[in-house]
Image (cartoon, rainbow, N blue to C red; front, side):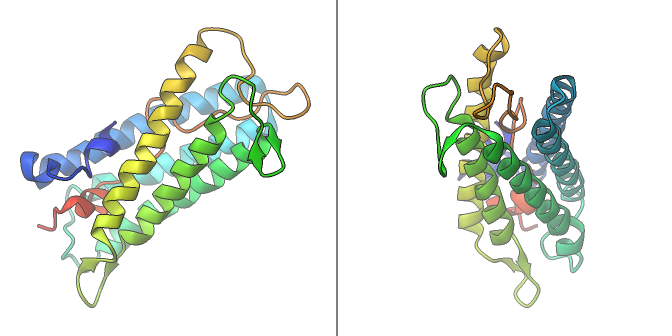
Length: 218
């Protein structure tokens, strides 16, 4: 929810740059909690794809923690912005994308498309879409040293919001299933597959790398 609100048009003007950056940092903490819960659940299932997807996802949330925390102190005009804020954001986005690919590859599919019919069949592909959108947001959020401005601030804000909406949809869709035994994601064999994005979130993340995208350049 934090990453859905943080880049929204008018939010930074309403609350100010510092509060906007705090919003992203709080969101990254929720991502980390969700990633830790997914890792714990995956360990209990003892499924290799589950384990790999959850570990990659958790690693990504930690990178986002670093990025959003540093964004509380580093402004876009800082010459070290890309190194301190954008780089961990980019690493986190790569981890999320890898996690989403592992989860989607292990899910029930017909060719490249998700196999419909099972509860939650849509979650792996929506989760992957969120990971891709966060990756695009990271690219658009790079600060060009020659100009001191983002590659595409509007694009970064839009894709961050869209990615966060994907992760929120997956988290909400998972709640009913967690109250009853189910096989939301599985292969052709009767093995449970990896679940979607960070539970409370996931998927993304970012502070001035993200909050800078919503206009806080001071």
